[in-house]
Amino acid sequence: MIWSKEESLSHDEMSALQSKRLQDTVSKVYAKVPFYKRKFDELGIKPQDIKTIADVAKLPFTKKQDLRDNYPFGLFAVDNSELIRIHSSSGTTGKPTVVGYTRSDIDIWAEGVARVLTMGGITKDDTVHVAYGYGLFTGGLGLHDGATKVGATVVPSSGGFTSRQAMLLKDFGATALACTPTFAMHILETALREGYEPKKDFKLKAGFFGAEPTSRGLKDELAKGLNISYHDIYGLSEIIGPGVAGNCKHSKDLHIFEDHFYPEIIDPQTLEVLPYGEKGELVITSLTKQALPIIRYRTGDVTILNPQICECGRTQVRMKNIMGRVDDMLIVNGVNVFPSQVEHVLSNIDEITLNYQIIVDKKGYLDKLEVMVEVTEDMPMDSIGALEMVQKKIQSELLSNLYIHANVKLVEPRTIERSQGKAVRVVDKRSLK
Ligand code: DLL
Image (cartoon, rainbow, N blue to C red; front, side, top):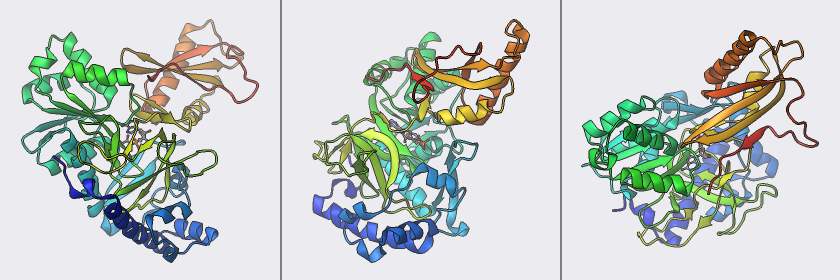
């Protein structure tokens, strides 16, 4: 089943719809968002210059930093009275990226998630166990609203409490699980350790996993271990949240809902638009969003677009599984972390220097993050008590500021190799095959 008719429009019908929606979006941001008016004026563009979807290439880019610079609501195009929800994702210096939604935005968001759930065969007869975090993160409430739109029964379990997740999966008989892939694997391993037989005890038939890059190996293990069809769900808060794209049962590539989110691939260095089939940075323009319309948002995610019509009947362009990022953002067990955020936390601790390295690795299916940092010359390396105190302080600052659990290793001054060029701040030992 296909959730909405826009998923299988002809190429010409889609272009006509996108062109009309782009014109509306451009007129709106020019009139309502001073940031965009200024950018358009600098480039000498007027809303009436934008006539077809191909004209998108004339428009300026938007970056994550632009949202931060306009914190909290500077890029919003509606009055407060029209907003019904705020979400956010973490930021570099404690200030998050803030996103807002009108009622129509929440409907569009739920529609995107409903489309992906439908790709996995979910209907009103199903029960969806949502173990993405509920709160400012868009995962929990995004999947919740989408499952509600489909008419399924939602179990709003949220993250954490792994043993309880396994118990509820068995007792409530959910037919779908939605969470990050690493958390799904943690639930599976915990369930097995506690004596469950997931294939028999759980009634799952589909999983909707996203929010972080995932290897093919992990996807296959989850599909096998839980006896489900694996569906990758992609999205980002700046665009709307989860439900920008997802994969159906016929294809591993994800259908992008381009009637709402227009995709382009650019070369991140030259900013030139690349043809279908070439690898580059995904850029998205929102075509229907009201509260936070966004023009040519540079997602930082690297992928390839594939325009071939899918066997399932959907005509919308597909993207390959995200291959990595163009910036230095790390995703550690679903939490986005920039090395500069870690550095900011370290800079507030007196006993250490800013010679540090972040080492990310995998233990089982969970990501492990270690921060190795040199202490100052006056730090007594023979006092275990003093070292432990500093370690604990750093750990708790990282947890409370960035929501990450890190192992902290204190080392003597001048232990970490100095680089001739750019400092090597991150050693990522996870291999994505
Ligand atoms: O992670 C939204 C989401 C929630 C998507 C639940 C899917 C499921 P942010 O916290 O703003 O939003 O992080 C967005 O996460 O730019 C990608 O780098 C990464 N990401 C999201 N989905 C996928 C995926 C949510 N399916 C950033 N595969 C994005 C790989 C993904 N990476």
